[in-house]
Length: 319
Figure: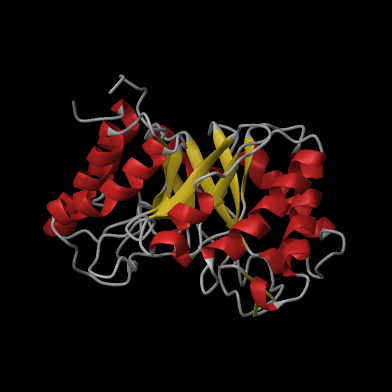
């Protein structure tokens, strides 16, 4: 295997997707975006990618209609604030739905998504630092159906002249562990021949460390299990000449989970020829001290996970 540069390290700065039942909600009360103070610990850690969750219904209150000027102004401020990062991913954090309806159950769901991305691409095509996270964790729909929606959005984006980087998820929560499961009905089959006319994309996968890969449990699987979960997805990326991005993963602070977190990051680093980067879940000012996977410092004190994440952020590896 040829030597490759270490994957770009990153963080999800959550808040824009909070209180999703309140649409559009009140900024500063129901949801928030990262500011300089929130981002500073991760910039200092050497991170180069920041993923910013956004609720679709806030940036575009009515599908197929103009973007909210007030929300667009907030996002523009976020982009300016996060300029120290190399890549700023605008992540539509809607799980493959809009207005409570799954896109494949709406007769114009594909057109709605393409319209959203056309408008965002027209606005941000002059800033290549901004990247487009097409959708967070689509689920409940066949990968082939989701792939057709992705293709329509990619065409709409590229027709604007935007060459910004795209982060392309699969269906089934875009899990790395399940990427190849299902044979002809898998994400692997649906996205094998994915093509971006601009050639500027990564396949986005997520991988948590607990028994069902949900990220909802306090205990983590052992490092060999984590390694095994990643192997098929990594091989698929290499065999099909795609670049991968691990857009979400995280770990509680107990010793076993920290070992598994280290194993996951070690795998990404060892396979940097296909994994271009990763973003830990999560930072953000509203987690408080109780959220077990938060990486946001509390009263200036680093979280236990930070030592491991920083090791890979600053050097790309513990070589």
